[in-house]
Length: 115
Image (cartoon, rainbow, N blue to C red; front, side):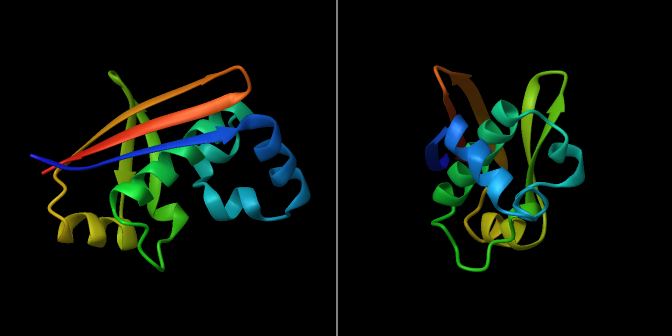
C-alpha cells in the first residue's frame, strides 16, 4: 500500500549560494557523510529530504539530520531515525523508494513511501 508520494525540486545555483551565505547550514541539513559532496549532489539530497517531509505531512520539529541519503548496490537509499522515524512509523511506512536527478541547473527528487 502506498502511504504517500513527495516530490521536490531545488535550483542548484541558488542552493549553493545559500550554503555559502549561511554559516552552519551545511551542518544543520546534512549528516557528516553527506557534507563533503558537491553542490549538485547536496541539492538533490536536500530535495529528497524535502520530499520525505512532504510524504510525512511536513511535521513540526523534524530534525534534518534524522533523514539522510545513503547508497547501496541498488543506488540511493533513504535512511531515517529519531523524529523522522517516529512519524514514519506512526503513518505505517515500512519501505522507502527514491529517485533523484540533476540537470539544467535543477535537482529533483521523488519519494514514495510504502506501508
